[in-house]
Image (tube, rainbow, N blue to C red; front, side, top):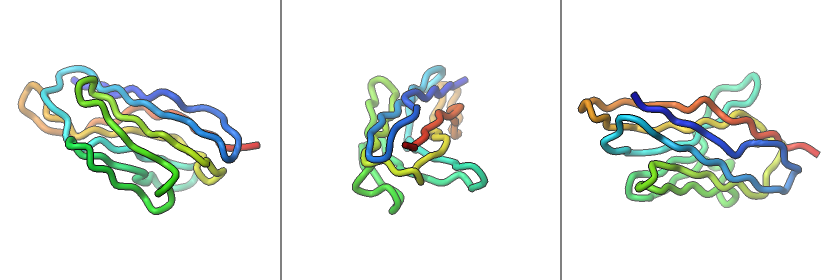
Length: 120
């Protein structure tokens, strides 16, 4: 089995910054893409940023220029640096990993989510 655990969420004022982390552990052979999603109350879950195993990122238009995704392959971790935060960024943030397991199977795994609240 594989577990993903997010950390780093919290309450921040508009214009502030937060850094989210997600650590993958368990029966991992390799990890392909790693993603950050978010879900605000009453809204569908949306893709915020994704990064390939080679480190190439892509972002939702709503966060381009403010958020930066990065990863540490040696530690099976992915990060999301969030700057210039807005109230509209308030959501539960989830990480997802496309994992090749030691069993030879490939599947997506999700973390439990971390709350980010942007408010004055």
